[in-house]
Amino acid sequence: MTKPLVVRMSSWWRLCVVLTVLFSLQGAGMYFAGLPGLFAATVIYFILKMLLQRRAKSFQKAGIKLMTEERYREAAAMFEAGYRYFSERRWTDRYRAISMLDYSGMDWREIMLANMATNLAMAGDRERAIELYQHCLELYPESRLAKPALRFLTAGADG
Image (cartoon, rainbow, N blue to C red; front, side):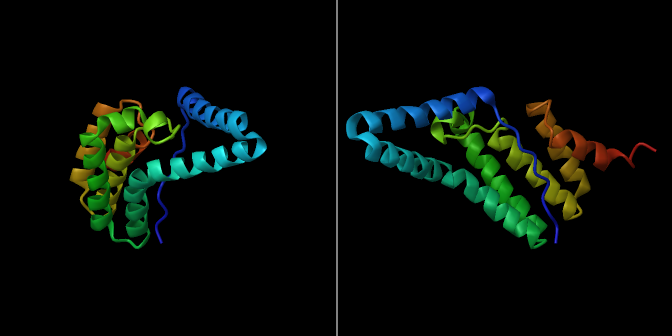
């Protein structure tokens, strides 16, 4: 069974925004209803976070599930759908600290694009994977997903 590469990065300023939302909800709950309000506001925050991230994570979860089943072309298509979704809704990704209460340091578009390339490489479409990784580096020059993968895929091509 193939395990996907996981790179976790956090953005400190996005984390501050997300925590501000959490503490604001908790403060309002405490002010209006005391300790039960604090508890209710915390529960509301986590439900809100789950609902706002649901669509984004649906592409990721479905793609990873297909990947672990070694259905790489189908996984690539799922990640491509996620990439298109976030390309059409750039504001959702750009302002994800508010739109999804997500403090990730990586754009969802970057994650989807790199995962699409990874799955195409695993399916044997090396050339298309290289193109996608290069495109990822055009969009995200410091991509911690695309740089090592591209080096790996092009290592044997030089000599």
